[in-house]
Image 1 (tube, rainbow, N blue to C red):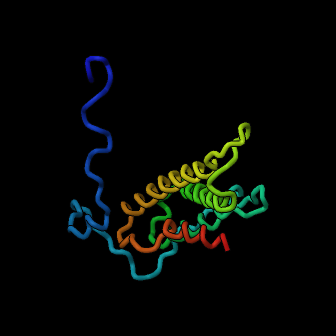
Image 2 (image 1 turned 45 degrees about the vertical axis):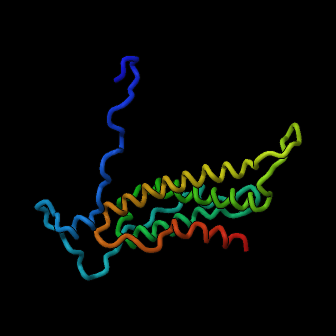
Image 3 (image 1 turned 180 degrees about the vertical axis):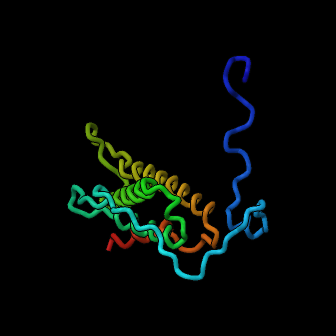
Length: 178
């Protein structure tokens, strides 16, 4: 603590090494005396998907359907395929799906109305509010996705790479324009 009472200097929170994935520890032969179990050869049944909440499939003001239900289902199926569905809180998946759907809505509005808007009192050109909303929703999407992906990375004993629902968000936006 500095003389003026502020907390300056010292170790920064989160500045340490990042945790390695479980798969990497197993590949390095580090089991810490714990017996690593190999999955059985038969196909295991996963956790059943929780019902999709009504607000994720609500019809929007303009009559358009919200794509959050599809994003939620895709993400759940991806987690199920990776064997990590039971480790991720369904509310986190709901937040991710809703934020991604709202981001898509904002991007559609920017495409429809343009990057500029008219100031309500002066009539001068201003930046469209949909642009900043889109940026905020994209931040939320990325934060939620990084949390989900970190859980998968830490708990998946097989490869966790490859196609993921996050890779499909932009394609979903492009498909909605047709």
